[in-house]
Amino acid sequence: MSIIKKLALTASCLLGLSVSNVSNAQTLCVFDPGGKAGDYYRLMDSYALEASSWGVKLEIKAYTDEETAVKDYEAKQCDGVVATGVRLQRFNNFSTSIEAVGALSTYPLLTDMVKTMTTSSGAAKKMSKDGHDTVGIIPIGAIYLFVRDRSIDTVSELAGKRIATMDYDKPSVVMVEKVGAIMVPADLGSIGPKFNNGDVDACYVSAPAYQPFELFKGLGDKGGIVKLPLAQATLQVLVRSEAFPTPDFAAKSRQFFWKEFQSNIDIVKKAEKDIPSKYWIELPVSSLPGFDEMFQNTRVELRDKHGAYHPMMLKVMRDLRCSNDGARAECAENKE
Image: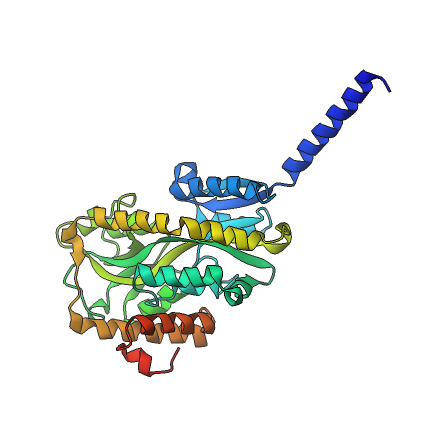
């Protein structure tokens, strides 16, 4: 065979290998309100670079609409998706139960829980369900209630108030019903305008949404933010098991996001600190048992009647809370 033919054959083989590698890339559809300029999209870029060292090639695709990203995953146009836990609840209610209402009131508790989910072999088995694997958890902040009238500081005072509620978020729908408030359907794109325009009396988001949603307009001079975490919001990385057969991929992936966990918590804390202190509403100690009872009743109902929360996850989080504060009323009970 001539030198020219050998070179041509070699080039052809290399080209075929290159095309094969591209075609074998797994697509990860990433929800980030900031699109390609967003912090979470940039994090996923770093993730793709790290994954390449595990023999996994990822193509990152940005979405500014969460629902579309999840629908594309369901339609198998993506091999993986990054979306909020509440959006992914129907795929795995174990990993998404970390967002259970009132379950983890502090970032240290959240950190302990995610560490357990990352390092426990028992938890790892629960992170896989029906051909879908949860391979990463990203904290995006405690959820707070933003109110246009800062005099609202007890559960009973929420009765009759209009609350912007994501109707696909079953836990929030149940909680709004429990306090006797009026649910006003909304999504991430409409919560800000509805609150700022006075279409609702309250909304719930995490601190990083304060600036981009311009919620200071709705807060005005009379509004405030109830300083009591309703839940811990997360972005979760969900992949189709068959698309990621590489040994130990799931474990390596969870470790990557665990290493980034504290940095993401720091981003959230800075966002909370940047909100003017005048807006934060410190609840009277006497009102806290009422909120705790409402949270617990909501969790139990969502576990028993709707299957939204995983019993084992609720129990582990209860144990964490009681380990941190054994005087809590729930510690003498056996409801979760």
